[in-house]
Amino acid sequence: MQLKCAIIDDDSLFTQVIEHYLSSVDVIHLDGIYHNGAEALNKINFNEIDFLFLDMEMPGMDGISFLNSLAVMPPIVIVSGKKTYGVDAFEYNAIDYLHKPISNARFLKSVNKIRAHFEKSKLPQTSIQQNIFIKHEGIHLRLVVNDIYIIRANDNDVTLVANGKSYKTHLRLKDIYEMLPQDEFMQVHRSFIVQLSKIDKVDGEVIEVNGRTIPVSRTYLSELYERLRIK
Amino acid sequence: MNIKELKNYLNCDDAFLISLMQKFIDEVVEITATIKTASNKKDWQTIKTNAHKMLSSVRIFEMKEIIIVLEKLEIEAEGKKNPDVIKQDVEILLDLTEKVIRDVEIGLEEIKAVK
Image 1 (cartoon, chains in turn brown, green):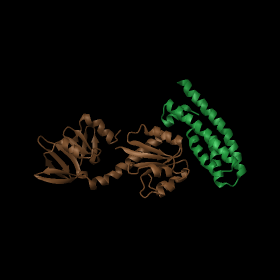
Image 2 (cartoon, rainbow over the protein chains, first blue to last red):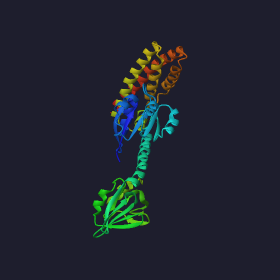
Image 3 (cartoon, chains in turn purple, cyan):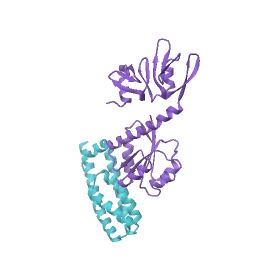
Image 4 (cartoon, rainbow over the protein chains, first blue to last red):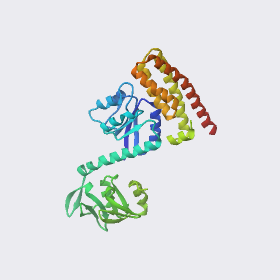
C-alpha cells in the first residue's frame, strides 16, 4: 500500500520535521506542502491524494474554514499547537490528532493509525466490488474475491476454496495470483496462496485458515510475519 | 538545550539538526522583527499570528521561558485590551529571543565540535 498525502501548515520548521519523518516511512509519499487553506484549495488535486495533515491555525484561511469549504472531505490528520482542537478532530472524523511538537515516536504511531484506517476502509470495497471468473467444470464461474480463503496447486490443476466450497480450475497458481489483489493475498508455500485476513492462527511454520492447516515455506515466513505484523 | 535528547526526540542525524537549528534562528529573527514593527504600529493581529507561529518553533526546542511569554502575548494580542501590557511583553520577548538565539548557536557549535 502506498498512500499520497499533502501537508497544509504555515509553520515551515514543523513541515521540515514532518518531511524528515516521512522520508523513512515507505507507506506514505509526500505530494506537496501548502502554507494556508487558500493555497491548498487552489493547488491540490484532491483526486490524487489520499489524506491531509492539516494545521488548524493558519493566517488567511484556517483549517476549519478550509474543511468547511470542501464539498467532499478527504481523510485528515489534524495538527495543532493547541490542545483545544480535540473536539474538532472528533467532529471531522480525523484519523488522528497531533499536538505540536511531535516526536518521531508519536509520529510513527500516527502512521500506524493512518495505515489501519486505509486498510479498514478497503475491506468492504473488496467484498462488494472485486470478483474473478474461473473456468470450473466447463463453465465460467464468478467468485467474490473476499470469499476466497485458499488457493492450492495440485499436480494438474488448482483448487480454490471459497465460502466453504472447492472449485477446480486449469489455470496455473501464478495466473490466479496475478488476478488477485496482491496486498490481500500472499503465496506462503510453493503450492498455497492464502487470503491474509482469513488467517486464524500462526504456529511457527504452520497457519490455520478457515479450519484448514497450511504449511508455510521458510522462504515466505519472514514476509508473512511482517505482513501480519507479528513481532 | 540537550542535543542528545533532541536527536532522540526527532530521530535525526547531526546534519538534519544543524539545518533545523539554522532555520530556527533565521525564522525567529524574522518573526521578532515583525512583532517589533507590529507593536509600534499597534497591529495586534500580526502580533497574535506571529506569536503563535514562533510558539510552534520554540516548542520543538523546549524553551520554557519564552514559551510562557509567547503564550501570554498571543492571548493578550487576541484580547487587544491592554496595549501597555502587550508592549511590555514584546520587550521581554525581544530580550529572551537574544538569549534563545545564543543558546541555539552554542548548541550548533557543540554539534560541529563533536563532528
